[in-house]
Amino acid sequence: MAKKITIKESIKGKSLFAAQEIAKGEIIFAFERHFTGTRTKTSMQIGENLHQESTDPDSAENFINHSCGPNAFVEFSDLTLRALQTILPDEEITLNYCTTEWVSAAPFQCKCGSKNCIGYFSGFSFLSKEQQKKLEPLVSPFIKKKLAKN
Ligand SMILES: [Zn+2]
Image (tube, protein in one colour):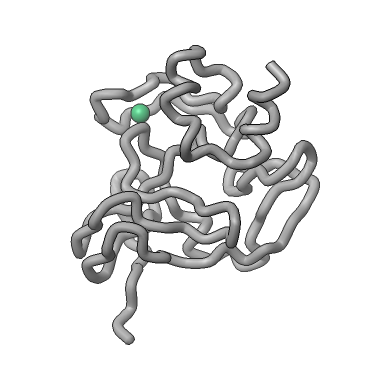
């Protein structure tokens, strides 16, 4: 099987790109399933004090950049990254970090260029009610639980 993804240098640093066409819904990769209590720049929030973090610094999961108009999403039932739409060869693979991070460990000014760009990214909990509503179908079970309490 041909390699689906590749890590390349871009203006954003090492980033994740498609090495071949990836169909909508297709699994791009499975996360390692290594859970820690520490929130980092590269971790992904699973629960209140539970974060997925690869033990391999070269793992693809460390190099997915954020976009407010992403082409991939996390399927939490099996902890895989999947294509939200057809992804073409050499296209950067992006994820909306707001779908996984309630409060981010590493906020930043977003320059994704998407027409729905939120500007400053600091986590789902800082979005407006309207922005939260729009993202709800793709957010983690943890964030859904948090929302239900509000
Ligand atoms: Zn943005």
